[in-house]
Image 1 (cartoon, rainbow, N blue to C red):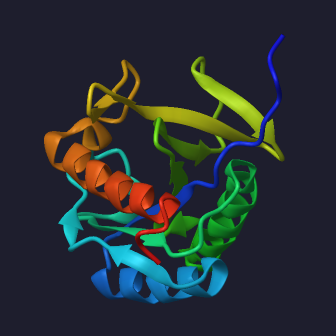
Image 2 (image 1 turned 180 degrees about the vertical axis):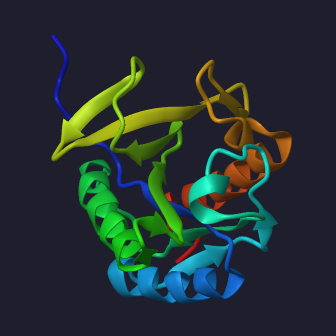
Length: 177
């Protein structure tokens, strides 16, 4: 018989992209209002592994990742997705998003993204939100899975997520505030 235990708190993170770089800065500030102070923000990146969003949002797309100082319970991902969806809706014009905000969490074992889209490998959480297991940590690094988005599985992003994991691990050990 298994013994039920609560999981450790996890590192909340968000991916943001938009054709408007200034809008990303504004949204980063709004995300801090929702989730508390950021503890890390990526350098500006191009979101160029797919042109899926071009028709809706335009091109080129600029991207940032952000993590937050406050760790969360894993089941708080549902609320985070609902809040970020409301943020996206505030910046929608004529039915088209000007910004895409995808929350997720990183634990020692995995990176999970929240989505409103069902698929074979996605697990329903609640309120229309699914958990997408995106990366797993094996043999000292994060690794993509068969369904992992190409940008998340790229060597550059794996390096970023490994760095986030190291900072998260230090926080769990009480080394980092």
